Amino acid sequence: MQTRTSCTSILIGKEASADGSVMIGRNEDSRAAWPKHVVVHPATDAADAPLFKSKANGFSLTLPAHALKYTATPEWTDQYGLFEEAGINAAGVSMSATESAYANARVLGYDPFVDDGIIEEAMVTVVLPFIHSAKEGVERLGKIVTEHGTGEANGILFADHDEAWYMEVATGHRWVAQRIPDDCYAVVANQLAIQKVRPDSPDFLFSPDLFDFAAEHHFWTPGTSFNFRQIFGTDSNFDRIYNTPRVWDGQRRLTPSRTSTPLDSDLPFALQPDRPLFVEDAFAVLASHFNETEFDPADRHSAQAHRFRPISLARTQESHVLQMRQNLPFEIADLHWVAMGVSAQSQFVPFFAGTTTTPADYQRGGLPATMDSAYWQYKLASVLLDAHFGLFAHDLENVQMSTQAKLRANIDKTDVASRGVDKAALADLATKATAENAEIAKTAWQAFTMELVQKETDMSPLNFKTDDAL
Image (cartoon, rainbow, N blue to C red; front, side, top):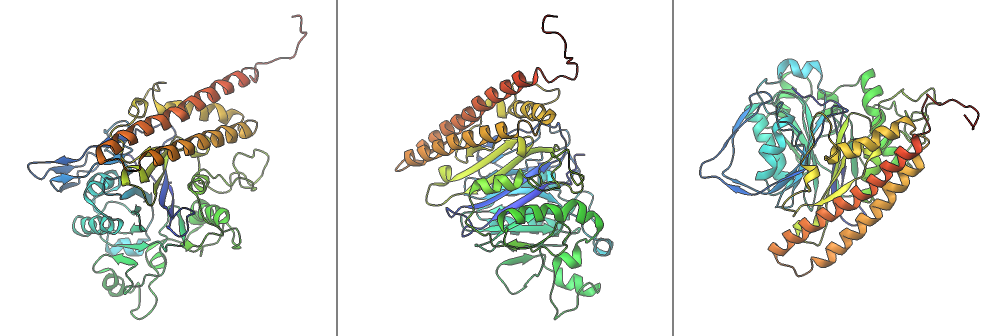
């Protein structure tokens, strides 16, 4: 079975963003060479309610007869399950699943995981096509976990055009979710992150007996503050090496005015940024590897280079930011940005949610590697960069920036063209613009890859200085 234990997530409220977008994003980390696809599932109406059955662990669930159209990023093979991971549906709702997490032994002793309960592999598939708001997504998944159980601890991200929610499933049947304050963002890294839960606030949802469970087993005293992270989570040396440094890395980028260290165990869950955030800020967090610090693993001269686990690393299969923009029809407003492979060494390409299909090279690619696959095209550039990362860092930044500018221009052109257009024409426009975006990035990165090949041809360890005439 595929397991994922090393993702990093970001959520941004509408008042924290410069243009009013609600954004959620995540690095999907599992294996260094394990291709992903980007697909579109059309809306369906089944005569009878279909039965979903997981290939990963046998989890089964009867689904509603009507399913909304949605984008998704499944595995190249369904041998271990679907792992659709992220997408945006036709109702203007986005979902990313999951951020793997850990619960402590105390709580797991009384509510262990369920072997055939829902796990990451199935979550997007059985939730996203059937919801019409971010909150409804939490409620649907929460009901499934309560009734069927889960086989692992996870964090799940939901967003619509008004709000973002972060949900944490800690034990077999217990979970909590928090609405991200509109003027805040959150960075999460493989640990239960939600802190003070206010049961009377509309900004929190939770499993029906969460407080009774905690009180019954003496994890919490009624009448005192209920800190979900402290009650259900972990606080170990592993967290301070593997998890909290990534949260610190994201927060030091977006709120540099706040003093903190990578070893802090009390980093806040949600923070206000020092300035309005753009989608490029979400990209920068997901692509970060402690850049410009002594902890950067790309700095081969630093003694601290591998002290902490970075956000962006070789095991990233794909990275995504789901951007819910305002004042446009959902087909054009909602952007499913995808960077294939290592986010620090790739390009975030925007897929309009209204597209009816994706470019062929995003639907291809497996093992062994083939160059007709978008995943492997970007991975080739990444591998070439690895050999001399510091030497080509400026060239990498240049191609990423120049390509992003062209993609931004095409988005703007599409926004203008969408005004007054009917629904059918919007789908055509979104499909055409998505293909153009993929081609813009592909053309730039193919040229960049060939430039790397050319420049690296004379950097072989088999070189030897000799007489020019020989």
